[in-house]
Image (tube, rainbow, N blue to C red; front, side, top):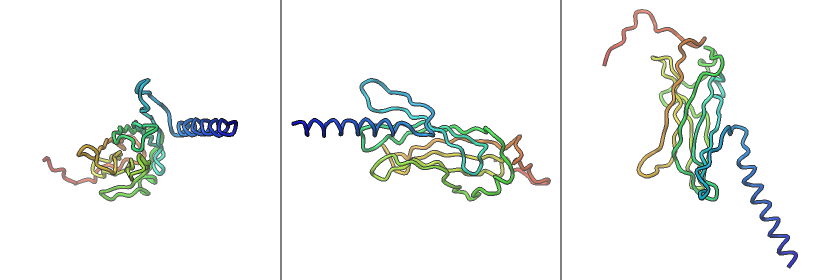
Length: 167
């Protein structure tokens, strides 16, 4: 009987430890409870772009403890929080699909939340899109934030003589 109680106590300690460590993420800057009778919280995470280090993004997403799958909804907001240089911009992927700068598993069923950086050269703006890789309720959930390069060392003025066409 003592052995069963000991094993039970160890399991309880491990489960509590798992959830305590899970919530102690170095990039987590906030945690909003959705109520007493739910295991879902809004987690607020911070991400510094690994190449354009003068940009910080904050991502809000729902995480459901004791669930096999987290909801796909997320929101992203990115701002210039430091210097952005032309050297940084020269290192980024400038293709139409851009580059994934962050990803996080949201389910054991292959659902992932990704953040992709895309450069809009015509408008000298970095776009950050947060999206789910699995369709939920007939939609791929996504959110967009932009960071203009205007006023930074990375801003490249439009080429003289270039004509912009109004649409």
